[in-house]
Length: 457
Image (cartoon, rainbow, N blue to C red; front, side, top):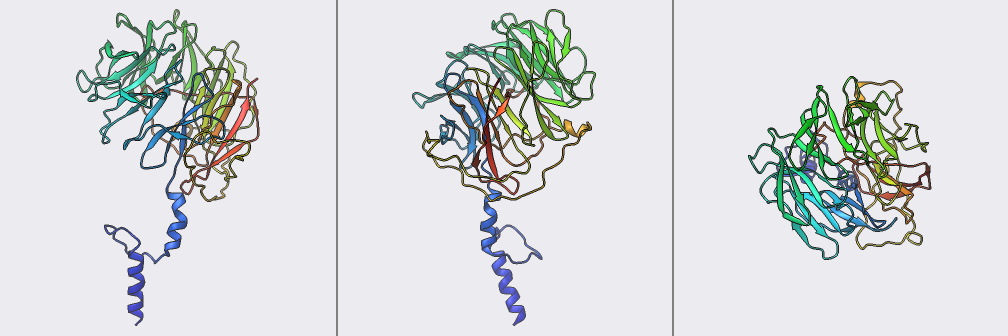
C-alpha cells in the first residue's frame, strides 16, 4: 500500500514537467509553487532606444510576446504604444536625425542574422525595407542632417563587410565608399560637413584600428598605428578632433581626444577603470561617460573646455546600459540595473495621464537582497563587459533641460563584441527629483524599473 502511494505521488509530480524531460529523485511539488515562481521566470525588460529629435517622446524596446519590439512613449508616465509586430526582434531603433516622424531599425528573418534595415513612417504606419533583403547589413551611422546613412554589408563577397553610403531619401541609390578585406569593418561617425567618415576595423578584443576615410574618393588614413583596442569614435562638432576610447599604454580603456591635424591626443579621464561608454553633447560642451568600477557603473560628466567635473547626485548602484543626450537641449537618458531594489507603486494616473493605449507589464514579487559593496581598488574584473539593461525608460518633460534615469534590479555581464557593430549612447544631470517606479515582471533577480528625473545646471 505504501509503495502504491509513492507511485501515485511520483506520477503527479511527473505530470507537471515536459514529456521529454527525465526526472529522477526529484520530490513532488505543488502546482501552486510553479504559479508563484512564474513572474520570476518570464522577464519583460524594456530598454531605452532613442529620443524623438523634435518632441518630448521616447522610443523603447520591450517584449510583450515572444520577441522584443519597438514602442513609443509620448509623455512621462504614459503607456507604451507598440509600433512593430514581427516574429523576429526589431533592434537598433533610431529616429532619423532631424525627422520626428521616421524611425529606422534592423531585423533579420528566421534567426539567419542577415540583418536588413527598415524605415517606419509614424504618420502612415507603413514600413519599407531599405536594403537588398539578402545580404548581412550592420554597423550603420547617420549624418547629423539625416540625409545619409553609412553602413557595412557583405553583399559583394558574402564575407567582407565593405562600407556603403545610402541617401535615405533615395534608398535605391547606394554606392560603395570603401572595399575591404575581413568582416570587422564598420562606419562609426560622419564629419560635420559629411565629407569624411571614421571607419573602424575590429580585429579582436585586444586589437582594432581607426581610419579617416574621404567619402568622395574612398581614400583612407590610419589614425591609430599602434596595436591596441580602439572603440566608439565620434567627431567633435567642429570636425577638427575626434573622441574615442583606447587601452593603448594602459591597463584600462580611457577616454581620449585626438587632434586630426597633428595626431596628438589628450586623455580626458583620470579614473583607473575602464571607460565603457561615452557621449558628447550636441554643442560639444559636455561629455558624459561611464566607468566600470569592479562591476559597478559610475557616471561622470565633464566640461570639454577644461575637463572640470560637473557635480552629480548619487546614483543607485548598478550597471549603466544606455545614455544619450537629447537633441533639443542639455538632457539625456540612461538605463541601469541596481542589484537590490524593491518595487514600489507606479505614478498616480491622476497626475500622470496615459497617452497611449496598451497593457502595462504586470508587477513582479519583491525579493530583498544585500546591496553589494563597491571596492576602491582597481582590478581587471572591471574590464568584463556587462549585459544590456533590463529597464523601462520614460520620455522627458516639456523642458529641454530635464532628463531621466531608468533602472531595474539586476546586474549581469556580457562578452566583448565588435565596438563598431552598434551605435554608442549616453547621459547627464545635476539634481534628482522624486523617483518614479515602473513595475515589470522579471526573473528571480529583476523586480522593478525605477525612473529618476533630474535637471541640468
